[in-house]
Image (cartoon, rainbow over all chains, first blue to last red; front, side, top):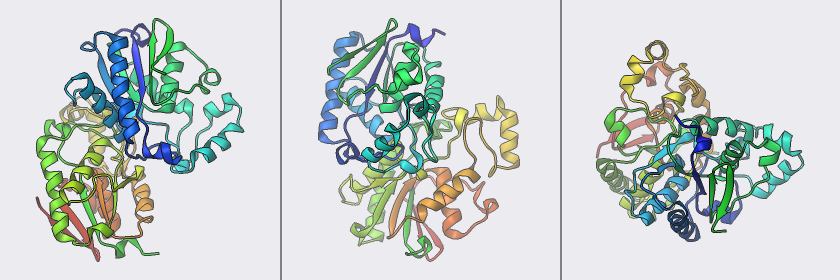
Length: 196
Length: 199
């Protein structure tokens, strides 16, 4: 089985959702994609086709939450692929914020910003997860990949996929931000963002 | 604050999935609804509409896993309501069966026989590798039910429905485990009485 660092990975966030617009943290809860979010998903499909060239040989994985599966299905429809032919895996779910779920995103960020990066990496939300715990579970999925793959996931899992691929420490990885529109390509030991 | 046992609750399992049909466990992964699953989800909405003429005053809550949300959207459409007038709550997610997610039940029985024997000995407290027990999820489901303030429609999963039943009917673990999942239809809980309306 090839190491996932020998593969090319295309990582995409779900399209913008109602909770992103309203400014609360959904985490393991969900909210519907906005019309803008649906357009982002279709645009990301077109970027994927352009960047990847051949799409027939790719494996497709989504987080099993509703917003990421809905995004994946819009992407596959746009690419003209059978809509349901992808795997929905729990290990790509957003970081579990536990008791911080549904709190205002700004309040969650403010309480986090006071903590140094390396400590924040290991600090679990009350009743939930730390980025280091997400790093661990996402790593188990990455170890199972056998072909170049498209991953449709969330903000924190995207950060940890990039950290695994580039061999970054938690402190190096944690400040990374990827918008809903755009595609992160991890290939040949480097990262590149398309469509920003 | 109304106790959730004083409310009328309608509970629906997600429609049949490809995993259900093939005899695989799904847990917190996801599996697509079959055509039958989609049809029954819509039909559940029609049944709800006939049972509860005041449906617009209900709170609609789904598990955030894809198969449950798709079921909820088909159900709302079947009931003649807007497909997005619902919220989700993570505590309604299916029990996490860890490393057994997406495995055929046959493989769990044979290749993972020691685990399966422990499950048969004490299903309530059995913890799948990398997952959680039903006992661990029981309190979470209770905390969710405590947040309900009005008559509600819940869409969730086979094991989660067992835990909802345990709370609503005041049942002990031995009384809820081992019961086969109802595949399709609407369960109504009112005044601690359970009624199944089949599709």
